[in-house]
Image (cartoon, rainbow, N blue to C red):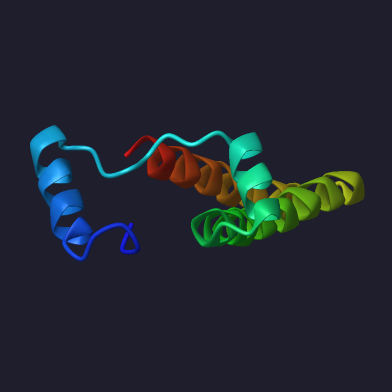
Length: 95
């Protein structure tokens, strides 16, 4: 945005205030293509996506590991953490 005009950040803030929406809807496939082309915004968004998905994958893997071990207490605790992480990601995506 900054490469277009010096006041683009001010314009973006005014746009957010007018429409009340902060998030931009972007398709993951579009982000991947743009990141491969070298677009800095797309590279940043793919990096943030990876940083978000790593803890989700780790907790999901741990959930199945505890389920396989039949450790009920840790299975329930891990399921709760996984559910809260998924809800947090969904709320972050919506808001």
